[in-house]
Amino acid sequence: MNAPRDSGRARDLLALALRRIRKKHGGWMADAPETHDLIAAMIESGTDDEARLVAMVEMACGKRSAGKPLTFH
Image (tube, rainbow, N blue to C red):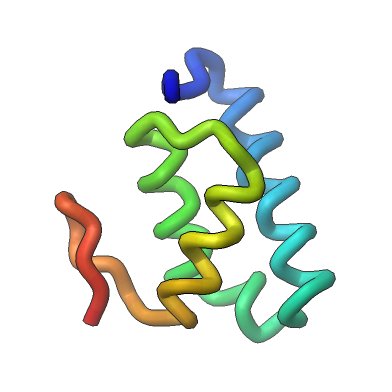
């Protein structure tokens, strides 16, 4: 998985993933800063698959990530 090279693609991925999360789980999860941070960190680390981004957010269930490597508290 290659990291998106342009910031426009990264923003598009973030927006698509958040829209999908909002539709499936509602605003409480999509609007959480932890969700945005996790998606941004995953995109930065090279994940460019929207479904994978959403799956990781679902697995984290709103928990905060604690930096690199991604761990959850």
